[in-house]
Image 1 (cartoon, rainbow, N blue to C red):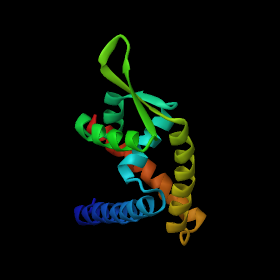
Image 2: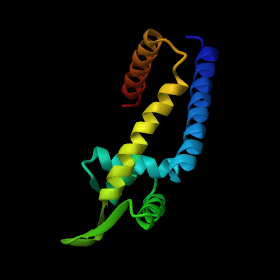
Image 3: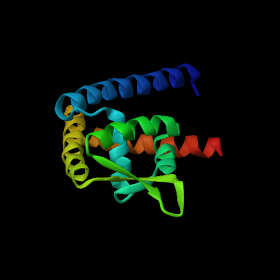
Length: 147
């Protein structure tokens, strides 16, 4: 394998990810006054069925509990999530989307999908499908090598 090509490909993936993330950060703040990590946390809660332990959210988002606490504090202040101690262990906190949070997340998820679609709309569906398959294969390869 050409190691130079592998390195250039890696840098191109990072660059594209950074470009998309920066645009999403701007769009989320401008349209919803939320940060990308706040959206990500709400998405994690949504995918978990609406509530989850703080420690599980930390693992899901691959950040420290301290980082999650700050994100939850801001979302709680805005009425989008609520925090509750687990009755059998008051040290364990359960975070859940409020009714308002669930409604706002639905709107944000719809816009997120539209934004990504717009960013990629000049790539043909066939090319996107091929890219998706190649990235899935890359994930499988990397995971297998890291075991």
